[in-house]
Image (cartoon, rainbow, N blue to C red; front, side):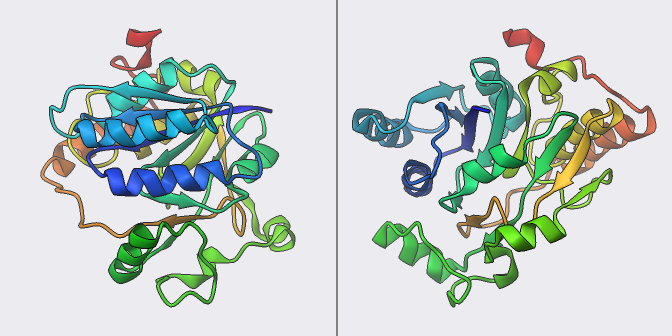
Length: 261
């Protein structure tokens, strides 16, 4: 199994640099890394150029004009240019455990999407990590807010990884799926603009299509760099689209990835 790693970002170059450093240190490298950029400035381009010149990773930059939060469109454009059968999707403020890609690939299974966990870094620890270019964090690190999610164990993962069909805890900052399954439901719904629910609605359509969820524990760990909460003025509107997908048992959206294929 080989994968494309897709990283969403918007105007946080110091974070994407740390994330890409953690990708370089993976036990198994993704075939390609696609930066799904929702309109960042040239500072992000400079970071991408730096890593492209290092030639450790095969990096592509998928950029769109900044017209506000349009993560669904940004992800669709990135997935559309991907070349691998399996997609690992993270956010640009998620530093990866060294086995992160390996874990997603070894747990990949037809008929399932994978949802991983994240450990939250404090504001102070985030500043320290960025200043010192730190990509390694441990259970006993005082800068972690939920230590249990930082425990790495293949034995515990075999015991506690579970298969589910509910939506609780769905986050596209740590998720993977077969590209063909994504295309079958027409990717992310681009009617979502503004923060909130575009990730859950995507998973609703996968579940409605017969794709189940594998919830990983103690594997596929990532560390979330602190940031202020996103503006949520669009959440009420987005909730309506999300609830319609649940109520109507929607399997495919109209305004999705097919535009770019």
